[in-house]
Image (cartoon, rainbow, N blue to C red; front, side):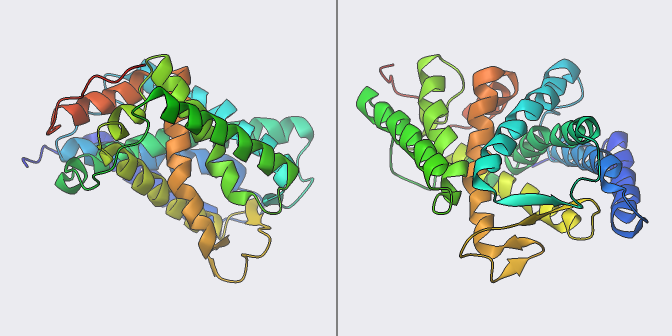
Length: 292
């Protein structure tokens, strides 16, 4: 692999991370509500620069409008999870009732806007590593209409179970929407992970697993000394923690990456399609015809 010159905006991103990481951990009083966005903006800039350095196409430079859409999509996407959490009550924000309802909504919306872009810029870096460009799993799923119907029905049942029995369904929050939306993307010719898994190609799934886990690590690490911050109220699984997150909770980040992909591809297929096209350039097999 031939490395390119590290872009200048990457250094600006590193500087933002260092400045706002320090503020987030060492500032006095409430600060995370306004420092969080700049911290993650720095992450996006330096991570995208790493991808360019490693030979990937930038998701930011030359794609301002498409990349900006990821911020807009991220807002309702995470508010959807906040709505589900109203029923599940898996996390709360401290200190409570600090902001007016309007201020809470505005600051939260700003912070939530960085979730989806973080997943995708991290995935773009991982695609530069040869390990993720090789096939590792020889198992297909979603290759038939019946298989895709099973996905959809399973997602509906998992979502219902989450809403009825939230004390037992924490994992369903991070899986149900994927099972519902993934076959819809396939049907409506949006970028779907099924176009890979139907031909025993799990590379993008593995990329998204690791991308969400990496982002999750930074979310949880930077949250530990934040103020405001979030804490978890997982039933039965809160004995052992890394930062504020119970160890078992990190498993939820794996399917969360798939849900981010599926929901983004449904609403705005531009960036997911770009990553698909990039991966297809190195595909070892032609995509077989799959009946939609």
